[in-house]
Amino acid sequence: MTTIEELIDALDATQRGQIFLINLYRTLECDFLSATQVKAVCEEFLRSVTAGGYSLPPTIELADRLGSTCVAKGLWLEGPEPILERHLLKREFILSRVTSYSGFFYSVLKRKKGMPTITYMPEPFDLSIGTSAEISISDVSKVRHTLNNQKWRALIVDNVRLDAHCIWLAPLPKLKKKIGLDTKKNLADFHRDMIGLSHFSKGQHLIRLDLDLGQWFDWTATLRRRPHGAGNGGRRFRLQYDGRKSSCHWGRTVDLARVAAENARNLNGIPELLMEGFSIPKGAVTATYLGPIKNQPENNDSYFLDRLKKNQMIPNIVADLKNKLK
Image 1 (tube, one colour):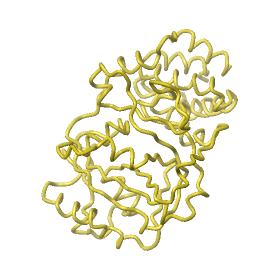
Image 2 (cartoon, one colour; image 1 turned 60 degrees about the vertical axis):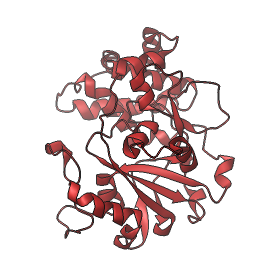
Image 3 (cartoon, one colour; image 1 turned 45 degrees about the vertical axis):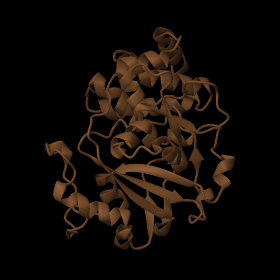
């Protein structure tokens, strides 16, 4: 069987893998997780991917797959630091989740392939088969009208159920402050970059769901946590951010536009937290159609890795992880 040492070496062979290792190292260093927890997930991951004599997947995919496994196995739930920010006690506070049209159609509306068609909410095209966009140009105005006028709520019988492994949320006031008065911004690209949604690509249409805590009375019963390096599946995650240490216990997104520019003083996006899956009254959810993504996300692992390493040496991080997880 492939060992954890071999897994670490395979991750160390690519920049994407080294990014994951740095975040994992800092997660353990901050005591957000125990080495025993991480070791158990890594061992199960190795058993599942090498069962039947298979070798490790191509190294370019390895970090993403292991990160996704850490999320699926619930590592994001662990750690000593629950999220209980005092400003969340304000009843007017609104949290925002950005998703694709496909994510909204299948996960929020709970539509399934083969269901009767809805003329004003068409089934999205599958971008993996070579289509250029999730919806056709002729459908954009219908979708925009249905979402922005909140007519989509009629398609949901009771509550909106968000039931992924974990739900990433950002504060709407911070987003609006970043948008400012610039009406020429491409809102889809802006949201994708500011929140660090590196998995969303050109051709997807983005939707922002704003969750009003003033109308969601049992939100305090939902587990809220700060993101950490072993509880994410994203290639642009980092546990630490640029600048002075903040008293806010939220995480901090990476601004992909600043990574792409390669000359920013800091790469900070906006605050972000994780919630477990939850059910929320549909009247407390406001949908906003943001439009199509027009540009591919940045993909410069080298620059991001250099910013992430700071003054630490990868060989030292690799050796420390091997020692902790042996």
